[in-house]
Length: 157
Image 1: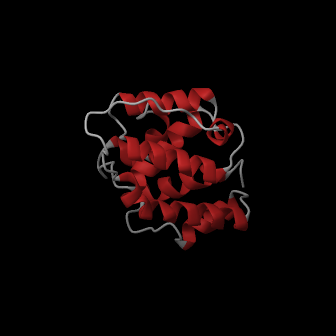
Image 2: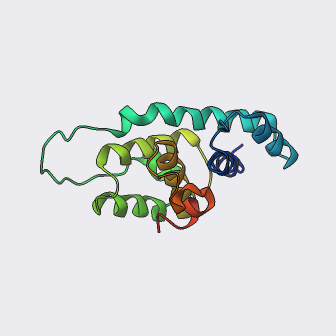
């Protein structure tokens, strides 16, 4: 699963963006993934994870505990093991620039730790952020971001 996970989720998002009536467990999406050679268990794991993104809304809408406070975030050992320094730096730059708030950043870090993917780098970070933002409805359906490949590769540069 680890190698194909984001690929499977990207296919699901792309298919849903192309067909507004398709849901993540749409028969044609699953059959297409199987035809592409993905394992059914890996597909089910990716679908379950993707569906869990919908429940992340309350995780993403955090409260600023100390308004105006700008602190220093220290990365824990397990966070360092979960992603490359470049991926972490990319996430932190988005956070410092105001694109992502602190609670969103922390929820993303938690998801990355849960995924336990090897070699989680900048490209995987961009893909994951694109998928999460798409699943949260942050991209407008008629914008270029609705095209999953576009959102995964270019919008978070």
